Amino acid sequence: MQAENHIPTGFQSAPVMALDGITKTFPGVKALSDVALKLYPGEVTALIGENGAGKSTVVKILTGIYQPDGGAIRVDGNPVVFPTAQDAADAGITAIHQETVLFDELSAAENIFLGHAPRGKFGLIDWAEMERRSRAILDSIGAEIDPMAKLRDLGIANKHLVAIARALSIDARVVIMDEPTAALSHKEIHELYELVEKLKSQGKAILFISHKFDEIFRIADRFTVFRDGQFIGDGKISDVTEADLVKMMVGRDVSQIFPDRTPVIGNEVLRVEGYNHPTEFADISFDLKRGEILGFYGLVGAGRSEFMQSLFGITRPASGTATIDGTAAQIRSPADAVASGIVYVPEDRGKQGAITALPIFQNVTLPSLARTSRHGFIQLAEEFKLAREYTSRLDLRAASLDTPVGNLSGGNQQKVVIAKWLATQPKVIILDEPTKGIDIGSKAAVHEFMAELAQQGLAVIMVSSEIPEILGMSDRVIVMREGRIAAKLSGEELTPETLVRNAAGI
Image (cartoon, rainbow, N blue to C red; front, top):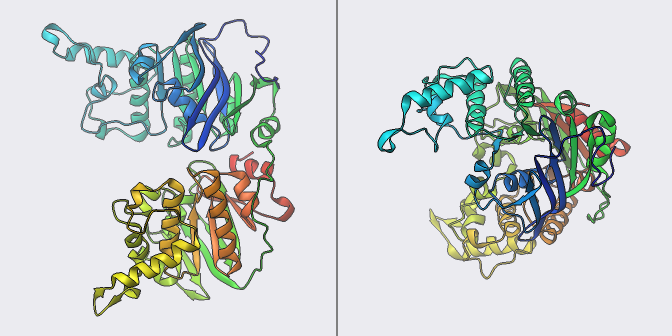
């Protein structure tokens, strides 16, 4: 393993691209702090780190979407600035994202050259040249695709190849692959590996981002590890083991301040048996008791949120049963779930958790209108009374309850969503990434309130990608990987290493 800022021995070429001392701050969050990254021609560098380590922010800086607050970007040793994504593309930097935006009604060739189609006389698109160049790019990556075929007629793997061809159409020197195998089959993943080897043989520098250690050790030449927005180390992949990388990923002190809890675990309130979905998850079974906080941990694509949405009635499972207080619950919709005593605070509170144009009090009382109405008419005074009761319990900071939710900070928006569901007086509350995107002070308030809820006998399910949060708040933890339960951990079994190993399939 290499020390910080140490250039590994055994490599003779200079980096095509390097980041030196890059810093990026958002309101309330320091996303990157003095990070370094080097990308070499003809080699794959794996960028490794748990969720929230700063990987996505670095990709956006490399591709001109974000500009750093400090530090330098160098291409061939020379400082450069990318004010826009087009400037980065002009410098030969391209990214293949997990979810690349393509257009089903356009042909493969049109998708490949969208925004930079070859043009002939009078500035008109040269369709013949676009087809010829598209065919050449597709052939170079071994894609047997008709350039003029509509994208809607192609399978998922071929759409992915079109996305790769689109990225390569700018004659890239640096190719960024962000979780490229997330939606691919085993055969398609093998074909992607072959493509990576072709790109390496063409001298392209590749940045490969993946949570899957088998992929990293299969195709990477180098590694760089980020943790909490900081550069931890880099080196040759042949010089480290999986255990070394895990320690670098999670080596922080996980004893950050969390509420002191003495759990008082009561009787079973929820039992889930054999929950299955055709594409998202399989064979999910567990129990949950009053006063307990049950953590769900996993990497991107593990299926945690998809299962929680099914348990809340947003999607239908193919099979499985849920029992509340010993009685089978028929959950066919969110209304059924709420009636049964299950509520869900989603990860995307802006789109799924709140109506941001409405004021705070109307958001809080929306699921509880029966309690604030008389003879079919909503009583404004009752709405304000109910909203005030639950927002005050969460220490919501706002000028008034008339304030539109969209005007609140992320932490206060989260409190509104939690208050909304608590007002329904549930038995089970599901919190999906409850502190994502909120500042440290608001995180502490949410953690404190979660502890209070459990103390009052509410059963809490917490989905989180943050290891300190999982370890600091959970009584037990279920680790999911690829839609299945990989482990059930408690007590001394709960360590950063066991979480990451089970989540990554090590």
